Image: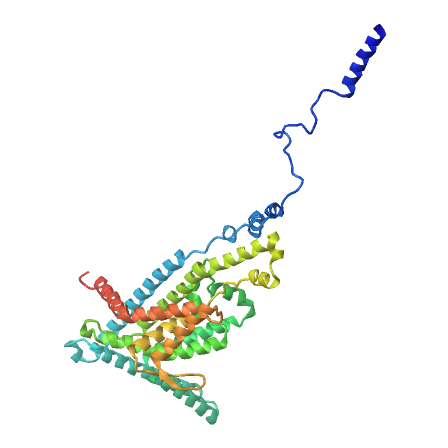
Length: 428
C-alpha cells in the first residue's frame, strides 16, 4: 500500500515535468498573435503593389536647379538702361546746344544782317555744308601735292577715286554720313573678332549673356558683329533707315520755329540709336531671365526626376526620349539689329507712303509699313516656334521703342534741350 502510493506520487511528478502547465499556440489570444487567413484575395494583393505615382513620390528626392544656381536678376540692367539713356541724351542735348551756338556766332561774325535776327536752322546747316566742301577741297589739294612724283596715270586714278568718294560723302544727308561712321566703328570691332588671341576677351566684353550678370555689355554688344553677313545686312539697313529717321527728327524740330534752333540732328539720332539698342537688349535680357531661364530649370528638373525614378522603365522608349531630352541653352546676343528695328519703325510711321525694295527674290517694291508689319509678324512666329537664328525678343523690343519714340520722342527731345537751356542761361 505504501509503495503504491509512492508510485502514484512519482507519476504525477513526471507528468508535470513532461507536460508543463502552459497555454498552447492555438489557444493564444488574438491580440498577441493576430489570426492570418489561409487565402488572400487578388484585390488585396493588387492594393499592396505601389502605383506609378507612388513610386515617383517615394523615389529619391532630386535637388532642384534653382537651389543650386542663383536666379538671374534684371535690376542692374534696368538701372543701366535708365542711367545710360539719361546720360546719352544729356550729352546729346549739350553738344547740340554747343554746335548751334557756335554756328550762330560764326554766321553773325560773317555778316551783320544776322544781328537783326538769329540764323535759322536751314541757314546754319547750309553753312556747315559749305564748310565741309571747303575742307574736302583742301584735302584734295594736299593729296595732289603728295602724289606729285607718282606716275601720271596712277596719280589721276587715285585722285579720281578720292574725288568721287568725297563728292558722295558731301552730297549724302547728314544722317547718312553719321550712319556711315557708325558702320565704320562696327567694321573695326568686326576685324578685332578675327584676331584669335582676342576671342575670349571679345566673347566676354562684346557679347551680352543674360546669365553673366554684366550690364555694360548691353552697350558694347550693340556695335559687335561676328559674322560678315550680319555686319553687311545691318550696315545697309542702318544707312537707309537711319538717314530717314534723322530727317524725321529734323522736320519735327522745325515745328518749334525760332524757339529752338538746331544746327545739327546728328546728336539727337545718336542718342536715339544708343537708347534703342540698350532698350532692345534689355527686353532680350528680361525675356531670358524671366521666361527662358525658369523654363530651362523646369525642363532639367523634370528630366532628372524621371531618370532617378524606378518607374521610368515602364515608360515607352519614345516617351522617355521626349521627356528626358536636353533643353535648349540660353545663348549670348550681339548686333545692332534692335536699334535698327527702332529706326525702321520710326521711318515707317513717319513716312507711311514710302516704298522699300526687297533684297531677295522677287526684288519688288512694297509699302514700308507692310514690310515692317511682316518683319514683326515673323519675329512673333519665331518666338512661338522657338527659332534661335535671330534674337527675336530684341527685334520686337526695338520695334516697340521706335513706335513709342514716334509718339513721344520729339517732346522728350525738346524737354531735354529746354532743361539744358534753362540750366545754362545767363539768368541762372
